[in-house]
Amino acid sequence: MKILFIGTGAMGEAVLKSVTDNLNNDEISIINRNLLKSKKISEKYNCKFLTQFEEIKSIKFDIYIIGVRPIDINQVLIDLDKIDISNSLIISMVNALSISTIQSAFIKSKDISIIRMIPNMNAIIGKSLTSYTTFGSDIKIIQKGVNILKTFGEIFGINEENYPSFVTLTGTSPAYIFAFLNAFEEFGIENNYEPKFLKELIAKQFINTIENWKNNDKKTVELISEICVPNGSTIAGYEVLLENKFNNIVKKCLNKSKEKC
Image (cartoon, rainbow, N blue to C red; front, side, top):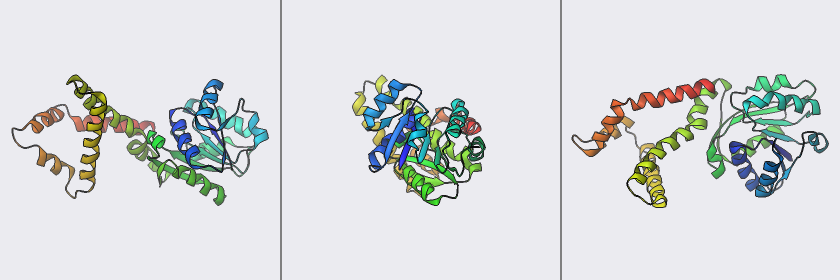
């Protein structure tokens, strides 16, 4: 099948990397507003690039993976409909863009199948947690689209009304986890640890702690209590988190993200 990526920003490129690594029998192309960027990315991932939107008409792609900014999506959909992309599949990773909004943009183009999905940046290492919802009667092309999603991580079929909370937990959360990691990293640098060793140390501690939490039947607060012995160094630091309402800050962050998803 012929696949076109429209917009390869950070997330689009992360998805593109996994797709090009895993789908050897498909013809993959990209298009961006910046032609130089398209050239560089096409060389990096051994795919083709388009110089202008009008080229789509002669190539007739089967699948369009859209990763443009929300501010640009309306014009992209209008331009696609003008070309007439009937019987194709749209895979949208545009935040807060509903299936009904995509449907309403196509007047000339008929029988459009749609997959709404939100990956996260871990797609670049094939470990995204991707939420998705499908629409359309062409089961074959929709299944092809779902298989594409599987190339960059685990997938979760959800109802559209669950997107705000689910995307907050999976799509936006890596940034907040990176922020927490960054604080540990800064502390280590301030205490004269070598950066490479420090990253390995922090990574192992987080991975091992999460593995312990995942496989433990105890409540999270119980695990915290077991470590925070009275008058110890752990509880001294933990009390600072409590004093500054750490839980409330994190939940406020997540709820603010949810409002935008």
